[in-house]
Length: 178
Length: 178
Length: 178
Picture 1 (tube, chains in turn green, yellow, brown):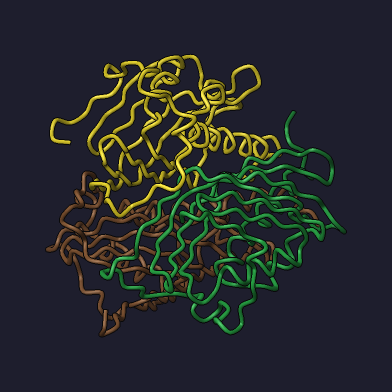
Picture 2 (cartoon, each protein chain N blue to C red):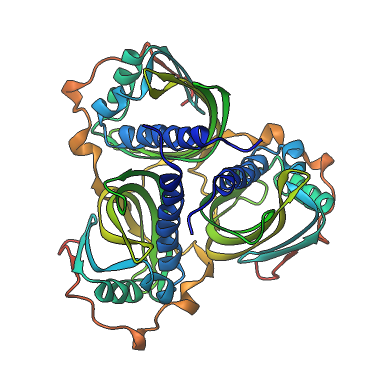
């Protein structure tokens, strides 16, 4: 029941695919992000105070480009993949997230973890993310302290400025209490 | 001295084994955890303010099920494996932990890192954890702040409630000062 | 375009090389660190409030041995490699760092993330780090709180004590404002 050479190669490509996703969101690399998703992608992210549901690559890229904006100080690291092949060109993946998101406009610091359950499909020779969903494991929200100095903040330059952002309120639902 | 195809396949399985351990503890997935350990497992976890020493799969699963309880907000991420084969069916592994543990009953926030030194053995075709130990690299303990809102907490549902917990004081020694 | 068996084996060795780097710095394992770099290594680390530029294995090891000293509480985790072969014995690598550095002498807590862009070369059968650079993605600096108890601190024992440290001010430039 050992992995074949082809499967070992595919595991490397599948890991790299997801690694690029996390680097892409934190650096607002929209062209990179656009290359990672199947056209018929489906998404369901269940956060502690929000839920994101959308369909299609275009909406996902627009969602990400507007979420990882110039007022967000963001770190998203995906860890510990458990990948299972379901066919020659399809696979499932479990990943475990750690994230920090500091919203400078709202002076709000959110950190936590989540477990992803993804599906991947090889489209035209390239592995793509076909479905992605997560549930929060922990999430902690607190005010940003005046003692905290933000001494590096890549999205300030790379992320969308207020006048460049589009309305994505149809893609994300925030809890009233949040 | 390159890895063989069999070894490359085993490396994937060994990584997944440990990935499941970390997902299992943070989600209180006792059935998953029970599948990961050799019957003759030995454990020695040397924390900053505690030490865990035990023998055998049953005690380990009981220890974990009672440690990752409904009052604990927990994130345990294992990183950067360095795996060395010591035989066809045995291997050693070094892993580097990052963890957060918020005890809501004690209002205590503990975070830190540790380096694991593990041994693995293939039992009946399946890799198992045969020995695991760690030393803390850093550990920081502070009171939980009233400003911190826990907006997601998976173990509240999945972890053992107070009346379900068993006494594991014979498996863990806490420093007096802690 | 799948990876060959040799490349899959090399990917394992390249990952382990970088994993050892992170373990080496946080444990002040100078002998381990010395084994990881090419003699003609070049380094350019661009932090939020500092910049490190140096050439050569000897200067790198001296820089690291003096930076990860007995007053530093340090966690450096490298994640999510994206490795590309550029020849039989050369490769490029992208890594995504998460780090915590608490300077006990200055009562200063720095945490953040960075993206590395490395080059590797096989020298005498062993992969070595030939070039490494990073840019900060986020960096947050705050005073260490009196509420924070450091309950484990490996570098207190393993790191260089004040009288053992050498002047590395020619290798690192600190911003005036920092």
